[in-house]
Amino acid sequence: MTCLPNDQLLQMETTCGSLLYELQIIWDEVGETETERDKLLLELEQECLEVYRRKVDQASRSRAQLRQAIADSEAELASICSAMGERPVYLRQSNHKAGSLKEELNEILPQLEEMRKRKSERSNQFLEVQEQIQKISNEIRPGEVYSSKMVADESDLSTKRLEEFYRQLQALQKEKSDRLKQVLDLLSSLNSLCSVLGMDFKHTISQIHPSLEDTGGSNSVSNETIERLDSVIHGLRDIKLQRMQKLQDLATSMLELWNLMDTPTEEQQLFHNVTSNIAAAEHEITEPGTLSLDFINYVEAEVSRLEELKASKMKDLVLKKKAELEELRRRTHLLAGANGDIEFAVEAIESGAIDPCMVLEQIEIQISIAKEEAFSRKDILEKVEKWVTACEEECWLEEYNRDENRYNAGRGAHLTLKRAEKARAIVNKIPAMVEGLVAKTMAWEREKGIPFTYDGVQLLSMLEEYTLLRQEKEQERKRQRDQKKLQGQLIAEQEALFGSKPSPSKTLSAKKVREPRPGGQAVGDSL
Image (cartoon, rainbow, N blue to C red; front, side, top):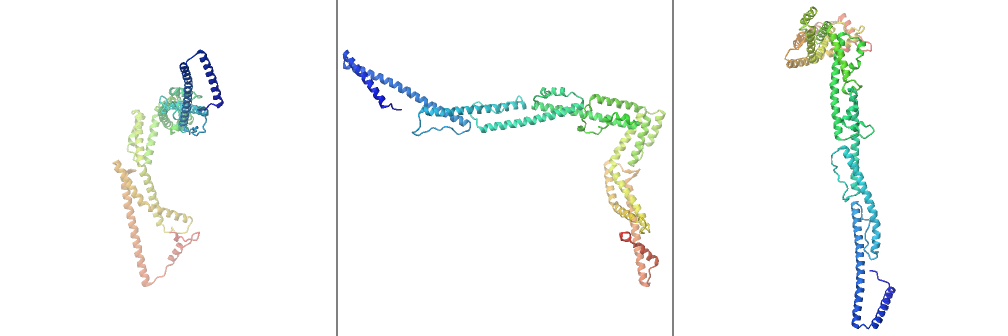
């Protein structure tokens, strides 16, 4: 406690002394006894003490309040610093040079006010970022409760936690941006589908979510909206595929009818946009109205008209189909087993005894069967064609080898030699061709349960016959080589015994064989 100045105490003592002296004079005049005087002085002293005590108590309470205010301020300041994740900005000075309690309180209060202001600003930042998180979360997943706790106790206002919220907000903003792009892509796909199918795009999206109609507003990006968009697009894509298939079937029928009836090109051009999409993929059909119901009905009506026209030209159609069947069988080397029945049916059509539609249906069935057989025989037939070509080369090579003048240097001789070399290379592959063809044919016959025929002859029999013939030729060539070798040995023995001069004809023949070609190489050297 601060002591009073000495002059002030002296003045107080002087004042109290003069008052006490004046009281003594009064008591003398009154005639108060010593006992009364002592009693009155004691009372006066007690009253002074009470006044002092009240003042001391009042000062003590004021000091306690100041200390409590300082402690509360320090605690609040520490709490704010802790909540904000910062070090305390005020540390009490414990040395003797510390100022008074009021000075200490006046020192801490501005810092407390500053931290309160910063805390309020930080709280507002938390509220703002969490409101944005809540808003975007509601847009993405409406109806779900936001998992993060809103700031209530304000026990953690650190920048680390705020950064976590900002990261969460950025993630949600990115998710919203991605979803918005997804929604726009889906709307673009839906618009394209509606355009192709001839449907009202705005009416379609209004059934999904009203916000999708508002081009200037914010489109809904919720899971439900995306799922409904996806579902509608899948549904419309199925419809598109169904209509595509129907239109392509109609286009196929239209082309067949045009070909059967020799429809003029000018008439075909009217439906070029139909036939041009006959083999188009789903993503290639984008022209507006191409798959609308009105357009499909229009095409269907045209096909029906052609069908009616076809009925009046059935005889010509039957003859064309008959020729198609014969050509197909010829290309695939199949026997025309039911050709006689078709000839009879054509005559019956002319006489009116048979419905031409029935005949045409039978021919169509036979064409379908022939196509299936042709498809299953395709690989083997390709190998047979290669084998037949190789056999032709083999025949040519045999004729070439029998020609005694094949080495004569005549005009075009070098081309003939090149062909002979090529033919030998092909002929050398024939055994492997035959072996592969036999294996392929046997596998085909095991699978189908029927023999593989080529122009009515079993292919395996043809191959077996060829193999035997080739073996016989090889044996004959070997026999001739052995005989020629034996003759050469006999001639050599005779020449050794009797001596012999080369005949002029042999010398001339040798010169011809060794006669050089253009380029300096002898004809005989190239073989």
